[in-house]
Image (tube, rainbow, N blue to C red; front, side):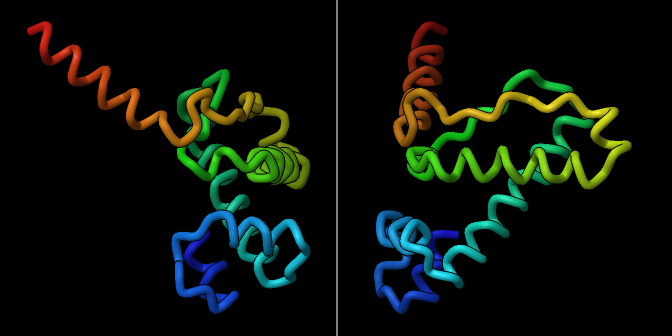
Length: 121
């Protein structure tokens, strides 16, 4: 999503998340459209998982999770899917959708945990 927004903006640094989210927050129409579609796609993935595993919580990690508007929009999209599909709304219990505590460092902690477990063997 960040790459697509930056392409639309003409930004040479396609990985520049700050520029992408600045455009989204400033009301750039095309950036907002890309962002909303991305959040809808994530909400659909969460719905698919939820119908199978019925989890209590979905944790979004990585640098992108530092943007509270991302979590808010995914929650909104998830709720909208359930509202637009009454049968789903009756059958699917919405999980709590939150940002990972360690945000962008989540993968580092996971790698460290795996390393430490491997050293214990």
